[in-house]
Length: 320
Image 1 (tube, rainbow, N blue to C red):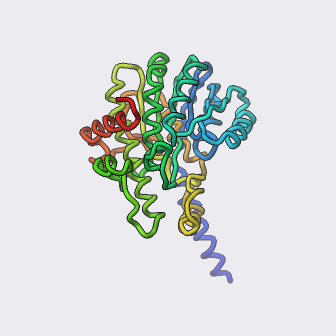
Image 2: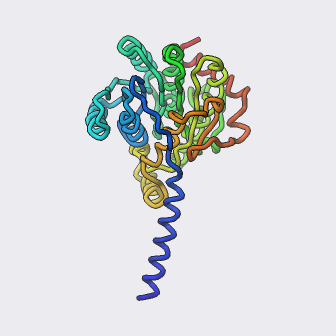
Image 3: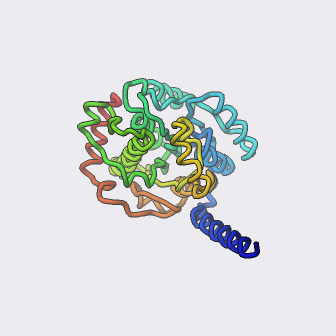
């Protein structure tokens, strides 16, 4: 019995130490945001909601750009209560519809005079097709955010210094971009796997590589404008991103996430670092993790692929 207790205590101690390591460093910026306006896509849950609370506490006017009105309005109430800031607003945005993205941008530009920070946080882990016929993961995680960012760029430039923060993932390391598949299937891959959860993970990885390459090319186009941009890995976080996945996949991932994933507050720290930290402007276009800039593999900094992805995305989103 005594030995069992010692082993249990040792295992628990190791787990707690590991958990603290996984939580990573915190954003240390003391920046205040009074008079600033922020858009956070997917700001009604998970990392996005935690980010919204922090920025609202700093005095920002926070726009939650979300698809589900009921969930978003509940989040608005929570964020106002937790932050003590009444300048928290919901605006409808469905990233799976390019028309919705255009409508959101038009309504925002009419209603709001400032945009100081755009946080492209929303992400989906669900196969299917968007309203425009694109693969759901590609359409939401990349193309919708691509169009949104470009439609809002002029306002960001007017309010410079300003920033764009793209929430990517370390999963990008397993991603590739197949332009032929994108041309023929309007997606980054085809469903050829018997275990659909792993196919979904592949598509998700492809989309996260798109986020990083988009950030790389965006930084080049923004040179000299006063607008900087960053991509990031938030960490392994317990969020609701997989709520629409199959029961089988949940049985695989939920036990792992319970043991090894950290909470959304920890997951929001690198987003906040990229949004707020002074002195990182020269790192525009770079990829961050654990509140620090990180090196990426050659495929994640391939200028030619980034340029081609931009051009293809312009065409697919109707910008060219």
